[in-house]
Length: 570
View 1 (cartoon, rainbow, N blue to C red):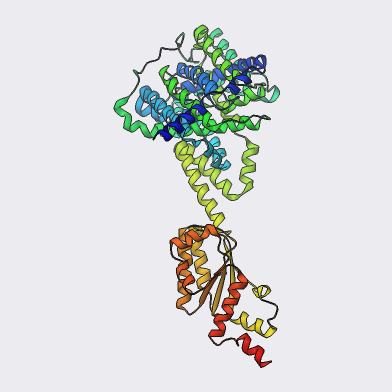
View 2: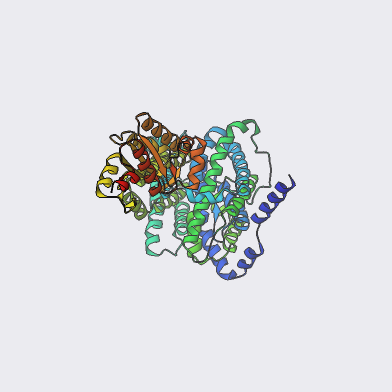
């Protein structure tokens, strides 16, 4: 017991910030401060927009960006990661808000934070590497579609219709717009989106999102555009921590959504950290530390009225491109947003909802990497199928089910591909015969003996096809199975092999095995495949030994003249 406690304490200590992390912060503070300022300018409209889209309001998005952004920066596993509210998380939160309200969302965030801490202590971060790229691309495409559709009510200037299915809500918003068109909102949203998309191509380093939002707000105020509804009053500071929001009465029903939120936070954060590593030289994130930081961030954010957070790929990319070298940049971004909350809340509250809708529509468009999608769909048909299914499931169901469906389908297709690598090939055993055999003996042996080499994995997905091929052997007295090239074997494969041997034996065909690897022997022994072969002396180390044993069997059966008799006759 004490050993487990000691190991657990050591694991927790390994997740805390180290002196090396602090040393990196001192490397180039000026550049990190400038990068943090740039990211904050980009993050402000996104935090407001995702807060509104989640259903908890713009203030929830800002609180999340400040609190979660700061804690994840300090305790996370990446020097360059920027955390906060994201579109992917918003997709998951909308149905939770519809069913359980704000209290349900905040409770889910708190539980998800605890789950993330548990995942970090258990060391589960390393398993991110097993998520196929086709699944990642598929749910990224699906998220982009959902985020874009979620902005339709705001872009059309209509109240958000009831419902938690994005396709249904979008259709109802279009119907409401058709009855009472609001072209002012459409113009603002379209203008902001166009400025962001065109500006990103023209001057990528310029934060066109904040410039477009400021311009849209000024136009709405100067021309008194009543149709352009503002986001509403914001608190002039962060609310004090409180546990009054906890919805303990619905704890059982909120547990599954909390698991979904924790899984998404882990997946997106680790993916974002991987992207940051790929954009730099010499940076390497610690996946378990990243989960630990995200866990603390998601525990703290609800206490201040924030929504669940995760690593943000777009903001992290801006951080890297701005020259950040340490976590000081992400911490600066959170501090600047906190200053905005305290000092500029009245100004921020004037931003039109349609302008934020335009920001998020442009963000959704920029999330779709056409070149990457084209490459993935051209790679293999399996990759294309997984990508399309994951994207469609994200749009029709929700993100967690989409990822599960993508993983299941990808796993099934991968198993099928691996199973097809298993081959049962008849081989010419004559090169393994000793040189004193005559051509006549070669012919006689070949007439009564057949040798097969099993290549690749022998497991549940391939075993039954193997049984069918082996059971059809006929016209011979001895079958030699060369096992040295079997790469892996499970219990199903061993049972199928046992069944095939027994069927051949019932037909009077003797089976001999050669070249069994040590790793295969345990599986074969567990289902008693080798018991009879050992008893009758039909297991051999090498193929030449098996051929010699087959020859003795044929001599004993009277099908070959014994070598001693032949030599005496000479």
